[in-house]
Image (cartoon, rainbow, N blue to C red):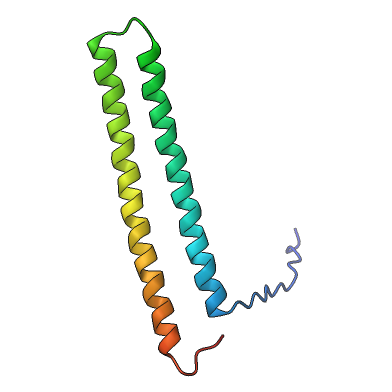
Length: 103
């Protein structure tokens, strides 16, 4: 069996620091939008359960626990996104003070 012929691929992606910072901020914003959609889904879940005429206290407790778990996870993710955003802001401030920064 012969060796595979792998082409010499040089992915020359050149991006300026300012553009990279903008992309990082955009990605954080998109993650926040995703989390807001998850919060909305949890809200709809509660509304759907409350519209049903017959539900037991156990049903309500189960839904409450489910929503609480999801909200805790969303909050954890938001905290991580806050840290990321703070790091990006620091990075931007550092690059603004560097006299010979590659732009």
